[in-house]
Amino acid sequence: MKVIVVGAGIAGLTAAWELARSGQDVAILESERRPGGVIVTEQVDGFVVEGGPDGFLAGEPELPALAQELGIGNRVIDQMEQGTSLWSGDKFEPLAAGRAAALLGIDATPMEVTAGFRSFAGGMAEPVTIVAQRLAGSLRFAQGVAGIARDGKRWRLAITGGSAHYADAIVLAVPAYTAGRLLERVGIRGGREDTGVVYAASTTVSLAYHTEQIGAPLEGAGFVVDPNVAPLQTGPPVQVRACTFASRKFPGRAPAGHTLLRAYLGATGDHPARLAHEQLAPILGIRGEPLWSRTFYWNRGLPRYRPHHAERIAGIRHRLERLPPLALAGAGYDGAGVSACVRSGRAAGRLIAQLAG
Image (cartoon, rainbow, N blue to C red; front, side):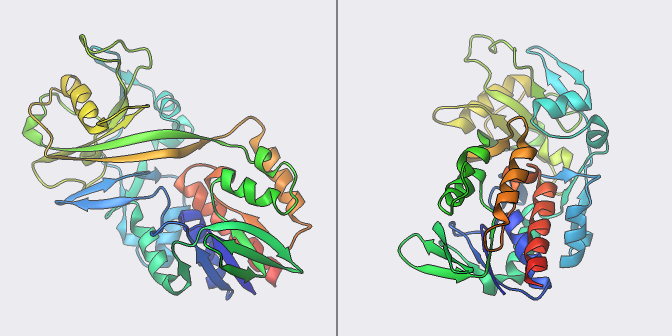
């Protein structure tokens, strides 16, 4: 059976990996020119810089299991420093694990957060890179899907630019707003509305320093800013929502004698890196300018579910049963974390493989 996976984020790659292992003829269409979606890792002057998620909950088995299958199980690393503080405007205060998770938008219980996080020695893109290498012959970049249509018992996928692909089955591993538009075109009423998930915009800034530039002791893995904190001195309102001490959270994130910070900002204007440095400097006693900075913009980053989300997605999946095989996978449906995306991708791949059998 010919299966096309639309989207080469971690969910789509995992679905394709599962399908390939079951012997299916699979192709992956990705509108961008790289795999991974919001998972981005860069190596800069000996630093490991994350543009998207920097880890996963230690109690979640999905990524270690995938790593074992890929032969990189020994690359999984544990969190070094734990604990998150609250910056109240003039001092750091202890913050319960569950409260910190809620402020950061992490869907996890206090017990899960207390167990810590894990990552990969070379960054979160390691499994993405290995899966993409294993499936290189099946990956097609710059192949945005403009529409899908039934072609008898098969599917026709229209590609931006005028070409088309045909498949016996599809896995839509794309954001919910894209999937909803495609589903409405094949008669799934309310597809756009029922998959309506709000994707929050975010900006992250990584800043590198000599460790001696930072005057305040860095305790724990980072801090979050009290949403009601007043402006610093006479400056603008604090737009740094949180800061991770990246080089203390996981090993190997910075060369010896250096510190890597990662700031999370709300809506900003120009020069978010300068803003992040200026607002972190009085909080952490930073002297001098950063060695370098790297900014990542996510106009539609972390999905936020509306009430009764699971019931709506279940309803859509039920309506899909009357169509040629089509499965949904990704953060817009089954959970926003990386582990949830891997789990969702596997489930989609297994469903299509089962229908093929």
